[in-house]
Length: 146
Image (cartoon, rainbow, N blue to C red):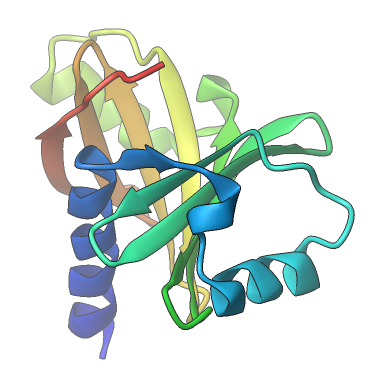
């Protein structure tokens, strides 16, 4: 089951790399309804289409957050920006040993619909993904579209 969830998270992450900005009017009604139910008082900064999924980017409690739903409004995952210093120590150890102590410029906590937590550490143009225990999973190139 964990393998299936991990595959789903990475599938969503791959789609994120190929995201296209869309207007709110282009977001399916069920997706919009699910978002408004989960975040009733939030203003979306940007909607993106990621394959068949939709991602809303917004500020929640002064923290950059994004949430992904499918076209039917099914919740997939939430990504919340976090302080680099708040990453699990095992991630910092991995970076020190395997990446010659390069500096993490951004960090995020990713929680999927089942509650599984993963972490993302951005170093240069690459995102490094780790599980909740800080074990390295994979890396992928980032596309900075901001």
